[in-house]
Each structure stands twice: as structure tokens, then as C-alpha cells.
Length: 129
Image (cartoon, rainbow, N blue to C red; front, side, top):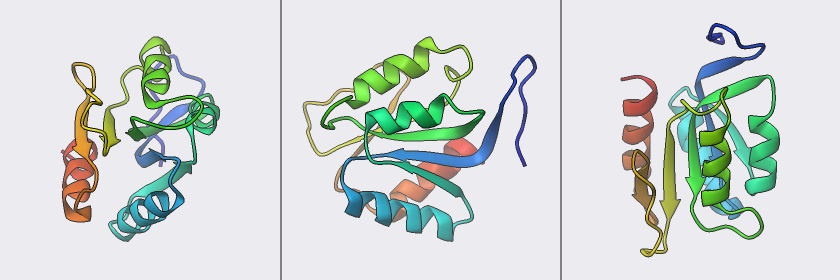
């Protein structure tokens, strides 16, 4: 069920997570782990596809975003999210193995490699409360 925010033509699917990563193995592992916990999981193999999803009628309740990707990178996707009136309230978690990636204020960081239990805990905190 989608929660529709006032003034929006689309809605936010509160238990939906958009996972953005250019590593297919990571996408698959995260998708499986979160789906097993009852979350709806949308995947994007890069920044361009993530923006396509975010421009859609339904928005995810959370974005897990790789900080380093080829093409449109995580910082660019985050900038778009923060600039878009429909999407700016969506929580974002950066994921990266590169310790030089520093997320901006208000964005959580999940260093790769990460334990799937830690990922599920973070997603639960942000989506369920």
C-alpha cells in the first residue's frame, strides 16, 4: 500500500527500498536479504537507472546508494534527490568500500563490505522505526 503525501500525483511506497549499485552481486545479495525480511526491493544498476526510478509515479521509502559508480555517481544521485521536491524527504544511506567517500550531513554511511544483518537493522530503523 502506498502512502500518498498531500499535493503529490504519485506516492511513497513506505516499505520499498531502492538499492543502487553497479555491482550485480551486491544488488542480488541485498535484494534477497531485504525481500526475505518483507521489504519491497527495487534495484538500479547505476545512477542513470536510479534517476529513472525516482522520476516515476511511486517513490521508495528509502534509498541505499553506492557512493562510487561509473557514470552518474552516488553524489550526483543524492544531489538530484535533495533538489527534487517530491523526493527530498527520502532517507538515503551511502554504501562504499572507498573510505574516502564521505557522505554529506544527514546521510548515513554503511561501509562495504557489510554484514547483511547490519544492513537489515539500518533499513528497519529508517523504514519501520
